[in-house]
Image (cartoon, rainbow, N blue to C red; front, side, top):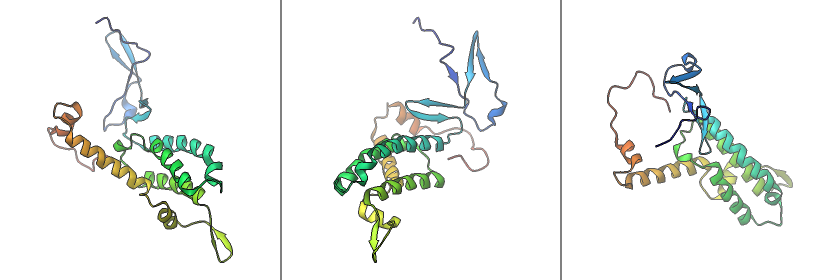
Length: 194
């Protein structure tokens, strides 16, 4: 086919339960020498050998935070209606949750996502005047006004939508075959990874 492997661009990532400290820095195949890596960016998503999604979520929050700070003056403006502000946030939300169907969220990650969302909602809805004094809105007040599921529930709904799409796929699709595979052997002792 006249295809050649580019030794500089090709990397090797081991995915195993064993410690990665024991792996050599290079993998040799014939005359080629490939560098061993522990994380990489693939199609804009961070992929690592530990299947730890925390860095990916942190990266997504930073990207959306930049967009949020550029829109901040419009989100705080009294000239912009609340519906327009909510619409601005619903445009930002998919940037944050891109490829979130594959995320396995820990409590820490859920807390980070909820914290970011509440920060945006507080900017949109502002403070509340009570007995002549201004105070920050409580979390439940923010979600009552927003009237949408919080970001974690939004991600869980996206996961269910993807699962339904997967079940309806044709049997000849690769992803459907992987979904239907029954692994051989016994699972190792201990709690499985997320």
